[in-house]
Amino acid sequence: MKRNVVAAIALAALLAGGLLLDSRYNIDITEYTLEYKNLPREFDGFRIALVSDLHGWSFGENNSALAALIKETDPHLIAITGDMISSRDHMKAVEDLLIGIEGTAPIYYINGNHEWGARLSSEMEALMESYGAHCLSNEYESLEKDGSRIIICGAEDKNGPADMIKPDALAAKLREEYPEDFVLWLYHRNDTLRNYPRLPVELVLSGHAHGGIVRLPGLGGLLDVRGSFGAEYEKGLYSIGNLRMLVSRGLGNSVIIPRFLNRPELPVITLKCAES
Image (cartoon, rainbow, N blue to C red; front, side, top):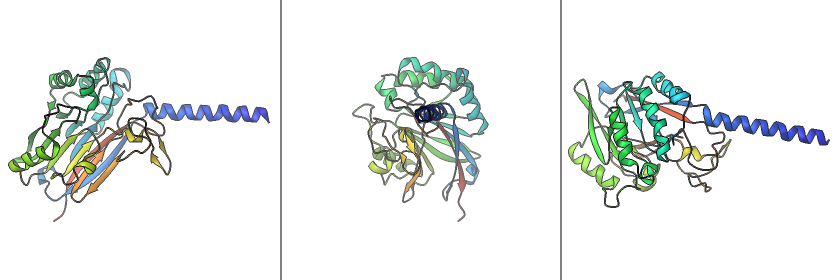
C-alpha cells in the first residue's frame, strides 16, 4: 500500500513537472478571423501577429524559435503590446527577437506597465526604433495600402506620466481627424471594456493578464497578474457593441507563481471585409 502511494505521488510530480515545462516552452498559435464592414477592400486578408508580455523570456537560442514562429505566421504587421521586459537584463532577449524578425513585416510597439516600472520606456523605444519599429506613445499613424488606409493608435499604459492624455480623450482626438476609418488600437492592459466600453475604435489588442497564470479545465484563468484570485478578461476575444478587444495570454511571466496549463501564446488576427 505504501509503495502504491509513493508511486502515485512520484507519478503526479512527474506529470505536474511535465505540464509546467509545457506551459513554459510550448507556444500556441491562436488564429482569429474578424470581419468589419468599414475595413477597406485593400486590407481584406490582412494578418497581424500579436506579441505581448515576453518579460525577457527566450524560446530557443537567441529567441530563434519565437522569431521563426512569428515568420511562419506570414504577418503583414507585427503588433508588440508591451511588458517585453521587467528589468534591464531582459533587453538582450528582446533585441535577439528583433534581430530574428527584422524585415518580416512593419513592427508597431507600445510600452507596458513594466517598461515604465523599470524606468526603461525610453530605452526600449530607442531599441525598437533601431530595428525599424514604429513606437506609438499616445500617438497614431495611418498605414496605407494601394491607396487605402487604416489607422494604428498606441495608447500609453497608465504607469506613464500622470499628466498624459487618457485613452478616451486620445480616441476623441483621433476621430476628429479620421471620423470613419478603421482603427487598430494597441493598449497593454486588458481593461478597455471595463474602463472605456464606448471607445470609438474597431479592434483593441492587449495583453497584461497572462491568461490568468494558472488555468484549470472548466474554470479558466484563476489569478490576476498580482497573484490574486479573480482573473478578468484574461484571454481571447471580448466585445461590447461594435468594440472588440483581443487579449493575448502572453509569452512570459512576471510573478512567482508559474504558468500552469497555460501555454505561451502568439495570437494571429486576419482582418476580413464583411459582406454588406
